[in-house]
Image (cartoon, rainbow, N blue to C red; front, side, top):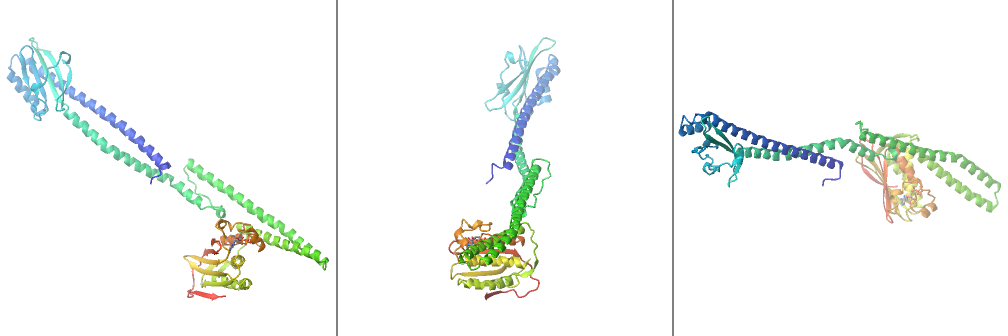
Length: 482
Ligand code: ADP
């Protein structure tokens, strides 16, 4: 289906319409011009014929007889062969010459009427029942001896009609051909000139908050397209600045909050020391301390995310075995699960190598497993899988727990987002764990996604660029119960 509203279609249609209009006007003027020219030429020829018969032959007539005249005219013009009509009338005497019927039988010379007084010394057109038309020129003359003659010479229009018809046919065949050629050419040209816009659109589509430093290709055409690409780039730059500003702000804010929080904690601990034994004060200070610890954790997490997003965190990257890292990390967390009677299984291919910061990637695994434990009821099961798919290393953590409501799925990686506020706060979460996971993945050129069914469980899937295996260490799938 062609998009009739598209610029490409509209311009091509306009272009084709204008061209067709021009061609039609041009064709019509050529047709009319040629018709008039051929008419005029035919008339000139007939006039010249009449004149030749009058001056060359009739002046000699008194001396010669009509048989001589007939031979002369037949010899000079061969009217039957050329389809001409010639008639000479001697006034008072009668018809002295009449050409024979033409070979193609277009008219009958004997039935051609004489010109009326008005038509003397001029031309007239005759139309026969057969549709054929004849142009006749008549001329009167008086010879020196006083005899008066009427000379007529005629020719059929047929030839002119054939020529004009040929022209019409040529125009009818070539015009659509030329218009379609122009349409195809125009469409192709439009496509070519809109190609850079396509390119810009594709690139713009790929720009997100994580790669705002990229710029779109600039079309150096010196026109609206160049201005469009330049202003889009300036817009991205402003967005880039704004994003940086926001990141800066949360990094600065959390950094500034750290020191006073530490001091607050120390002060509270000091007070707790002084009031040891006073149960109610101890209780109050204990809960105040708990809240400050909580606040510290939030501030630390925020700082980490801001720095990761800003690319300020120095990563200690090295080649590491993701399967091995996941196995050991999950092993350390097994106890945590056992407290809720949640089973933890790991299924890791060997030799899934990536380049990354061991501590950070471990944090990813810890956060994901920790969430699964938090949001899976007693007796549940958590599975960790590591494998390779194409040129990606894949880490999956799935559980058969509460799951995430569909409306919340797109938001779980946002800062401070909690699907169920009451449920999360009770378990100590501030909604920052997955933001950290996502930031770490991004810093490793990786991606994270989640699929979840409320009430059935969730699967978090991390993809990292896979390092090619250097030594073939017999990559095989092993199922280990940790
Ligand atoms: P929190 O500190 O609240 O756990 P996260 O950023 O780690 O914050 O997670 C955000 C929200 O995503 C959580 O509040 C929870 O609702 C949902 N969520 C995360 N992991 C799971 C999971 N495995 N099962 C169900 N819900 C989850």
